Length: 416
Image 1 (cartoon, rainbow, N blue to C red):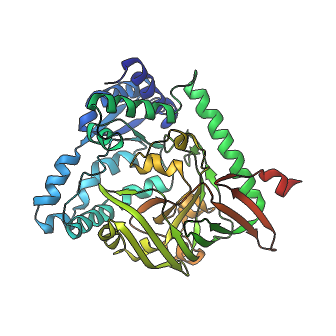
Image 2: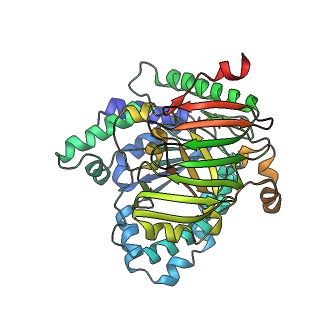
Image 3: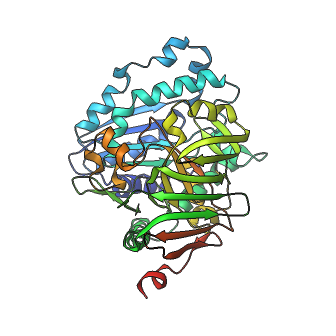
């Protein structure tokens, strides 16, 4: 189903560049049971890189579906804290974290949306302490993908199953730069390019963005004073470099939780925990979503918005329409990929790294400066071929950032 030599090289890239595993470090590996063979390759590469030990945890969408279908509601809504204790303790001990995704976009289709929403919100609350370790970049972490049978059939419907799986592997390899002569070098160069955009934005003095396109998006986003734009490789608080997502094409920061006004229209489906939400839109007033709708999956939005802070934004990310992922001309039905084919936003929690000293702030301090806190962080895509993004500085200067869906020549605008 995949070329073993390439798969092993991909596993090496995940360990050496993705989490940049250090000799003697612990590691946590979450993997779909369907991809056990590939997971073992990643496991072996971790040990080859000098891992002291690796905690391997398999997950299974089909088993999860049965649980949401049959488990007692009390079990779904009262998730014990100890469920996530093992990985939390490993993370507290400095373990690097690798998550291999291979989601079936229709995994939970037909499951009662209220049961599903309550269960998923409870899971998000239970694992929040573990999630905070990521948010603060206390450890290296990376999210990557492996081709799965049901996922491949969704992306390439009506064709031979084995062909579809191989085509999906090929797409994963292409978007993670595995088809270049030296993938690790290609990633270093790509990260450097993204950081150039971040350097420009951080020096620009932009405090407000205006987004608009012909689909109906017309949105003003105020930024937190001193908000930090980031993209490409990240660093832990201890200075170890890593790639949080592979692929990645974005530069991002945190909007002010109370300074978002107007309408945004999605341009790609959102696969939220196995439920597909399509053709949806939001209207914001003073940062809060006050109206919303969807052609399909609105009930899932209803459940997401039970946490009121998920009605606010935690991220705005800029991605060129002609990104490497978009050039693949595939709808992946996976946020990991589709968010890198389009400018996107996130409902819910902001990354504390988006403001200086954010990782040390209390909840009250975050709210005071405009940094949103929630149980979830849910990306959705709004980028289009005709998207225009304009930045405005405190003194009223207008800086064109995107025209026709892509970056403009930024340096001439600021540094001429």
